[in-house]
Image 1: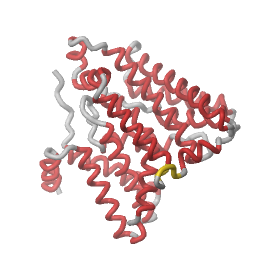
Image 2: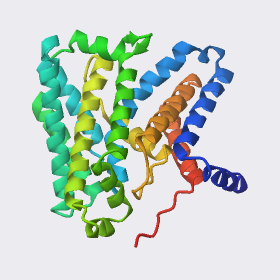
Image 3: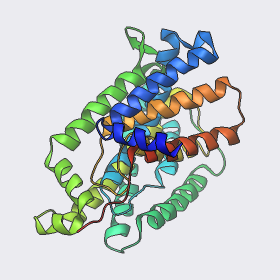
Length: 324
C-alpha cells in the first residue's frame, strides 16, 4: 500500500493536482456505471455538475483564503451561506423585482462579515481559525435574532428559473453561472496585481512585505471577498432549494474546504488554483453520488470523504514547506 502511494506521488509530481482531480472524477463517473448501469447517461452527468456547482461556488472564497497562507481557513463560510439565503428569502418576499436589491444587501452583509474577520486577524492578531470560528457564533446568533425562529418570506419564482432550470442547450443556469465564476476567479488570480500579491503573501509574508506588498490590506481584502462569495453562495443555493432553514449552509462547510484541498491548493498557502477547486468539487459530488447509490449511512459517507481527503493529500505529497 505504501509503495503504491509513493508511486502515485511520483506520477502526480509530473501531473498537476487539478488534472489528477479531474481524471479521478472521470474514473468515479465510470465506476458509477459498474454500480448502476443507469448512472452512465448525459442527464446524470449534467445533474452531477449541477450539484457540484453549488459546492464550487461556495468554495471560491475558501480558495482565496487558503492561498493567502497564514494557516487561513474560513470557518464562518457555512454560517454566512445560511445568512445569505435567509436574507434573500426575507427581503425578496417572493417578488421578482426584489431579487437585485436583495442580492446587493446580501453581498454587502457578506463583505462586512469578511472584513471583520480580516480586521480581527490582522489588527487584533487573532488566529484565523479562532477568529472565523468566533464569527460563526456571531453570525448564527444574528440569524436567530433576525428570524426569531420563524423563517418569514418566499423565494422569487424568477430566481428558481434562473438557477435550477435549463437555460442554454439543456444546461442549468447554475452551471453557466459556475463557469462564469470560474472565469472570474481565473482572471482575479492570474491576471491582476491582487492575485500576484495573494500568492506572494501565501509563500512568505515577510518577503512579500519587504517587496512592497501591503500584506494587511491583501489579507483583509481576501477575507472580505471570502465573505462576499459565501453570501453569494447562499443566494444561489436558495434558487435550488427554494426554501431556507437555520443550518442551510452547514453541510457545505467541510466539503468546501475539502474541495479546495482535493483540487491541489496547498494548505500552507502560496500555491493553488480555482480550476483545482472546481475539479475537487466534482470529485466530492461524485463520491457522494456513488455512496448514495450504495445506500450507505451518513456516518460512512463522512468517513469516506475524510479518507479520500487524506489519501489525496498523501498522493500529492503535500508537506508543509520551510518558509525563509
